[in-house]
Image (cartoon, rainbow, N blue to C red):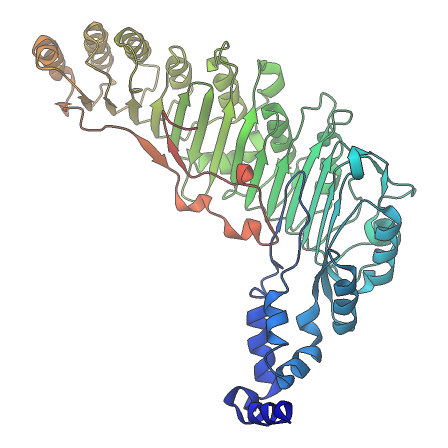
Length: 538
């Protein structure tokens, strides 16, 4: 009797008077994220843990009252995001979703189970995320994904494949789902200790591509270009764990990607990234981010091929930022809507100046008009400045806590390089900043010589700012000589007090590209970092 009374009372409640269409609209907001294609955003990791679809909200809605439960059970779209964590729940969701397109995450090390599932439901798959985990106790039995190549998926929009052990494809073809996949917008392929299988399909609508590959036997660059040829609508390309290929695929003409907005390469060999970059043809406003790269001794022959077909992209960049901190180095060039960044680690025993020169030969930056430089390397600045013929503004940020002797040598090298008027011939302003424990007195004479020689050659500096932490004695000793240089500086000389305690570089907002993660969540070490603090970067 009490149950019937409660049911009657619930029928008169305001929430029970809502039409089923309104309730369903509310339920969708409670159960799913906004329908933007993200489907919860699978995290792409090289060794993914099991992903479990969130069903808590849906479970709560079906236990409010009978009316709400009836509406939910008769709404197939509420039951379309599924995982195989609980077999009984998977079967229930498949039944309640009826014929609606489904988004499924399958985590398994059983080839037969995966084969049966895909063959049985491929016609309904809107999104399919596969994590092929290693077997128990680390066994590495081959994982077969033949169902991907032998079934059809007419409504598939997103496919992610993460294979973490040996993989075998028995079929003679590498065409996904037997045909041209015209509905696919997003494809992510992650192979760890596995032979790569790059699909040969034509993907007319693919906008997002993520490829990660750790297999020493076959470099990714031997296969990836063959896929890129078939992605004319690609907007976001992300490559990880890419090794250098001495015999990479070559083409008579660059691969056209006219819609490309961002190219990101992470945890890879710098030579491989530049190799791939050289194979592509992209628009003027693309962002190229090479982050957490691995560098060794790189010869000019390996990286110095000029990217001549990208002149519009290169010419749009006007600012350059270069810094190093211990074994971390970063080169960032920006334009109004374009950008190029290399952030890498370097073996401390090697000088990275020759490497930077080779990079500038590969990606010439003749259009740069403003440069900010912060370095511990004594030979970097002269090597870099000689490659910047159009720079008009130069800022040098001296590293905090360095010895006066090393700072002296650093500034001497810069001033000696600039004393040659053919080095940065259009340079107008120079700014030196930093808290360095005193002004290096021995750098004063090279500075005066530099401004005099540029003045006499007809290419004078207009203005110089020295903003360092002078002591009263140092300033008294150096100021007369520095002031003597004013006669060679039409815009004058400004001596500051070292008020700038540290320098942080914040990349512009254009480097934030939310749409790049529309279909997945990138691992933290593969996201674009936008803020750098020079001497505490770890």
